[in-house]
Image (cartoon, rainbow, N blue to C red; front, side):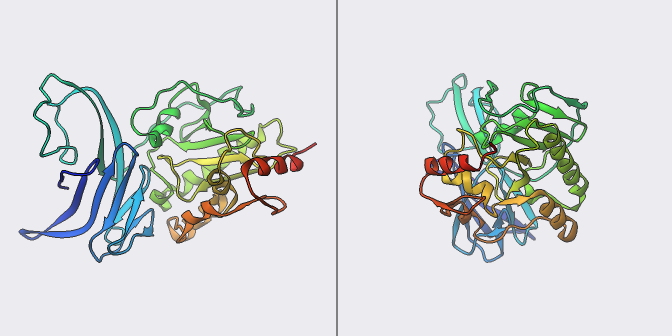
Length: 330
């Protein structure tokens, strides 16, 4: 991948070798490191997708960390990662994607810098394990949950830090760990994460089927020990296009009684087909070997506010919350 000056962040084109010559191919990438996304433009005619959604010739999409870029018929999967470089020197070795040909000569060898950089890497996996543990705080409501853990790099990488933080963990075994959502959208909102590094649903294959089933079972275990399990309903599922990197299963009560529920996007991400039931995902992987996302799935986040129980339309989030309180158990 070659770098080009101009714009904010990195701009480049992907090239592949063909015999002794280089063939100009598929995509142009322009990174906005401050905003934390990369604009992908399809230059060639071969199919290119972001999270299995086609881009289209000469069209652009914004790709966030955690999403997967497939170049040429899903043969070449890549992810984008942003990282903070703090307290390091300019002379430190960098990847080609990070180098700038017109770097200001005023930066001396000893100058300390604080810079955010972007790189692409092929999707891979690695595993780890932990002893089984069930915390006494695992069943408590999520209101007021907070953490002082500082996450390095882009915010979308935060789950990878939180899942390793003992103060965030409420359950763990050799395959998974459970944490409370840092910004819960209901009274009870847990995330079940695998220890294996799996970026998102789009990276899941048939070999992960047993893991998905285990994650579902752990989610059901969390519901079973909930003190309000007899009065509250729960759903287990995944966001079709997650904003956070690292595969995670949501276990969320259907009261949606939380101050962290603030926007239409929050609401629709859990109450439309944007939220994929865990059992449906498992069946899809069992039958098709992977998870597919329907076209225009992202548009579901823009739908009008509608009560998930009685289907009444509401105009604002405050009106929705007032309405939802009528459905809460007495």
